[in-house]
Image (cartoon, rainbow, N blue to C red; front, top):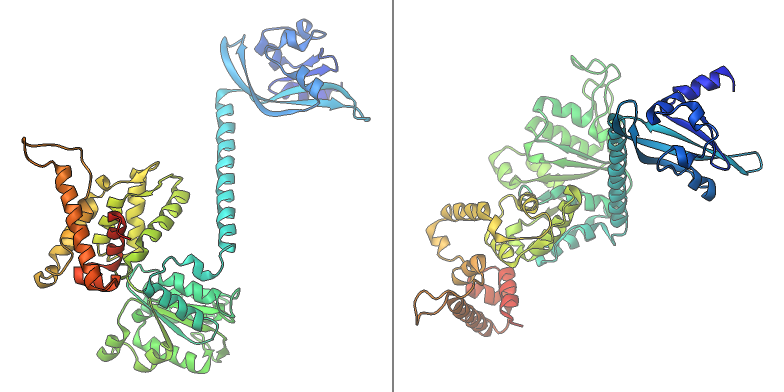
Amino acid sequence: MDTLTSLALEAMPNFVIVDARGIITYMNTTYLEMLGLTRDQVIGHSAEEVIPGTRLLTILQTGVSEIGVTMTFFHQKEQREVHVMCNRRVIRDASGQIIGALGVTTANTDEELESVRQKLGKLRRENELIKEKMQALLHQNQQATPLSGIIGNTPQMLKVKNTIKAYAAFDIPILITGETGVGKELFASAVQEMSLRKGKPFVKINCASIPKELMESELFGYEEGAFTGALKKGKMGKFELADTGTLLLDEIGEMPLPLQAKLLRVLQNYEIERVGGLSPKKVDVRLICSTNRDLEQMVQEGTFRQDLYYRINTVELHIPPLRERLGDLYELCAFLINKINRRLRLETSGISDAVYALFCEYSWPGNIRELEHVLERLAVLHPNSEISSESCDFLRERIAASRQSVPENIRQHTPSSVSKELSSYADPAPVHLQTGFPSVRELKEKQREDDRALILNALRQAGGNKAKAARLLGIDRSLLYYRMKKLGIE
């Protein structure tokens, strides 16, 4: 063995070589010190006699190397237990015959071993995240259409989906309206995916998040030296980036009037001119706009150009608020809980009937976004079980506050006996306050029978028409469906 090879082996934390019979032919000084032995005491002896718990003879028999396994030794010099991570490999000759084996440690202290474990744990977690993302992408690719990702089958949502089906393929401007939190961007993405521009650039810009003085350069770009701080080579604007594809102008109601005029010229001529530029440039862009404001009222107030309004509103896609499509609520909850479970690594199984009834009582001013945040908060409290109503006190406070803000004449027409019972219904154990008095369970049962009779009577008066029956009862139709199912009314 030459000097360099010898020094290299001595530099290893622990290193041992055995022949085909498992007899030690070499062991470096570090290994000898840990075992408290001399070289004469190990060379020529069986590895099984010298090294406690070794598996070198096992890999000689199986021919399978072992990488990254741990062993525990008693360090004779330091008089303490040490944990090491080691690799064991078979040694073969040119013909493939096993002629020996070697063992070498890669971590010789608890600190080194813990560092390796942490790195391995991080790699495993990253691998799991990649697998989850791949599964999510695979699931998305298996969706029948882009509309399959939009949850909801109420008449209002079916109308929206049918409008997208009818107009998505045509290169005409679409205006998406709706309250904050209804998911307008999701619908814009569905339009893009169902259009002939699918796979082309889909560029988004939020007009409310950009300072007014910078919005023109963001939309149309700028040339070199156009203003102080401009990049030397200039910069492309969103219209240029979206060329051949689609541009989503989110919150277009926040666009200042002078810029509205320039946008109108772009839509008329399909040409943009960079800030500081001298010549126009042709662009091929389909425009989708969205807003949570009443643009017609803004036109009347003079804060939005009438000609631009008609230009961008060839087709209006109005997304109904959550309170107007409570029939989709249960399906939305299931979808969002699955999404939250994947992101936060939870196993929340769903919501209880009492929680669903409570959700139906709330007006959801923040719409789907608020629903997701509420479910996220509740899922953390029920990481391995169904969400129960005991955790919903904060939502009850929101409901109470929203009712106080409703005028009395409107509040009188809100659901009373049926809806109130829905949010608080439970089946406690029978408790008799005094001999001869009905139990709480008996009172609840009587209330159920009364509600059942009330609903059946409304259905008879409505000739079986559930929508009409719901109006007679003064409750939402989805709440009527839920109560009928709860009371066993077919």
